[in-house]
Amino acid sequence: MTTTVTDLAALESRAAGELAACADEPALRAWNTRYFGKTGEMAAALKAVGSVEPAQRKAYGQEANRVKEALTAAYDAALAARQEADLLKSLAEDKLDVTLPGRSPQPGRLHLVTQTLREIYAIFADLGFQVFRSREVESDELNFGQLNMPPHHPARDMWDTFHTTTPGVLLRTHTSPGQIHVMRQACPDPVRAILPGMCYRFEQITTRSEMQFVQVEGLAVGPGITMTDLKGTIQAFARRLFGQERQIRIRSSYFPFTEPSIEVDVDWPADDPNRDRLTKGTGWLEIMGAGMVHPTVLRNGGYDPAKVSGFAFGMGPQRIAMLRHAIDDIRLFWGNDLRFLSQF
Ligand code: FA5
Image 1 (cartoon, rainbow, N blue to C red):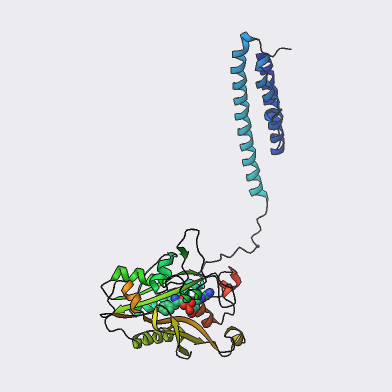
Image 2 (image 1 turned 90 degrees about the horizontal axis):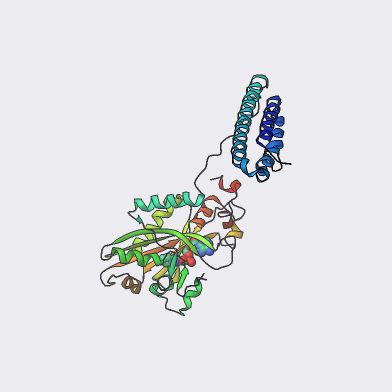
């Protein structure tokens, strides 16, 4: 059997008639499948161009395309008109239920660590300290070497380290390498800077220690800076942050990059039932290490230790937030549980 242009005319008028008779959207969609589906009549008519007599093939092809476009346009218009009519009908007839409660918006808030960091910045800004940013991926040389810990120095064991696959490159274990960056940038001028940022240690996670945590380093370098200045700064800071009623304790300690070195503890809230567990029965939680900058470190920063001195400290804002709010597990900070975070 040969296919002709006359067949196309019959197909067009039949399809147009059926389209006009479609009473609703499902009927329209069924029509579309019938004519334009993969095995639909229009598809077959287009394919049939191969069986048309060669002399009429061109005319057939042009006519087939015209019919296809005309029917497609008619279908699109009929579907749009149907949908519009359905919408108007439903708006006119259906009831609108205004008694359902709306969804209340959940306003975002700053993470407790960000809030604590901002309080720390504000206090140190009043004391004349500037915020300085320093890199998280550090060289072994700055994280340890320039801080007076040459390779194989036993004190390196205090900082279990994540090394990268590039030899001599690691994730900083503390913010102290930032001291060297600041000094080299500021020398020979005096320095008063704090350096906040993330640190990484390959250590056991406990209720008080994370593998990834925030520190704020502090550094003051200039002529005549003494241990009294360090003590006064720490006390002024702790009073502002913790209030008059909380106790702070300063103990002697050891760090290769400070001499002498101290550690600072704050008393855990006395009425909190977790006090003994979190303070190992002592009542105190350590918040920072500190000390007078070692002459070798001053020299590595470009200064002459005969002319200037300095103090440095490194604190843990998460421990500080734990002490202020009696938070009994440091893992809650990065746990992303909104029931915890939305309390602050
Ligand atoms: C240091 O990291 C020294 N760089 C601090 C320092 C700076 C000393 C400048 C002298 C001069 P330490 O490891 O003690 O020290 O850490 C300092 C503070 O960081 C701790 O008191 C604690 O508050 C916090 N911290 C340390 N390790 C963790 C950890 N795993 N998880 C959460 N906080 C931590």
